[in-house]
Structures are given as structure tokens and as C-alpha cells.
Length: 213
Image (tube, rainbow, N blue to C red):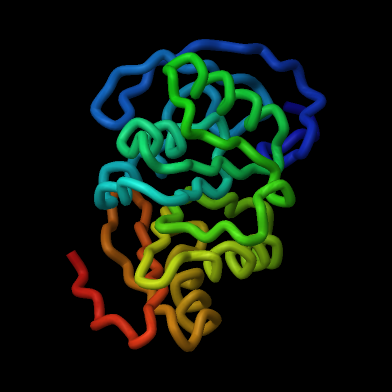
């Protein structure tokens, strides 16, 4: 990819479109990926861990895939919750084009693939699911989470997957210290070197403590 990263806004590397087969929401799908996006040749191991260790998505409302890449989390949510609106948010224009292409190929009309600044400010989310872009650096990552986690609806959850060697435990501590009061964070699963973190936005009055399942 040369100097391109998967978080490059407009990758200069060759597109090199390709088709891969993945299993999402219990269905085998052929999807289009490309060079210059995250994990173009397979379903990333961390994303697979997240998809296997999170509850069903809410059936309606707005759902967010933060850092969508070519769209495995978005497509999973859109398939599972056809009456919800799924926002695929990424800075990589090529990735967003792939999300749109894949959603159209499978008849998913409930997907909005958008740059961060194009998501209306009044939209709040019943769930956020994300394999966040750890390699953007700590400051950028923290800024990303500070922007989006507060946009959870009350009594709603964000689910994040982070590789243990890339700072999952320190990120959990940072989330716990940063989003106070009104939020809590738990590690709900560990698999294949990844942690799954659940961030709850409590309501008014506060929700009861969440049991780890």
C-alpha cells in the first residue's frame, strides 16, 4: 500500500477489487473488498471475535459501526435488524464506497455509509459496534471515542474489540476514568488475543450494575 493506511482518507494505492466469501449474521455472502482498506483479504480475526461475542442488535433505531472498513459489522447489523438504520462511519472514502456496493449487492437498503462529519448531529445510537482503528495512535483514538460514545442513547451499549497486545487493558482503564459519571465499562470476553469491551451509558435514574456474561 505504500504510504497508505486503512485510515487514509483517499488511498492512492491501486484499488485491486476482489471478491471474498464470508459468513455474516449466519449467512454466507460474497462481498467486494479492495486494496487500501482494512483487512481486504479476509474477515479480520478481531472483527470475528466481536461478532461472536456480542448480543443481538436492537431491532430498530440508529446503530453505528465506527471505523467500518469494507463493512462486515455494518452488513451483520443490517441483516439482523432490517428495520434499524445502520450508520457505517469511516474516514476512508474507498471503504465507504465498498460498504455501499456490498449493501446494494445484498439488497440492504437500511445502510448509510458516511464520513464522520456527514452524520447529523442530532442522531443518537441504540448501539455502537466497533473494531476501532488502534493504529491511528492513542490521541486520535481517544478523540474518536470521546466524540462517539456520548452519542449512545440512555441505557444503551457500545461493544469494542481490541487486541490485548495493542493496549486493550489500558484502553479499558482510560474509558472507565474518562466517561464519568453516567457510564461504565466491562470486559465481557477474551478470545484469540482480543478483548471485547462493553461500555454502558446509564439512564436517569441510573441503571442497575451490569452483570458480566
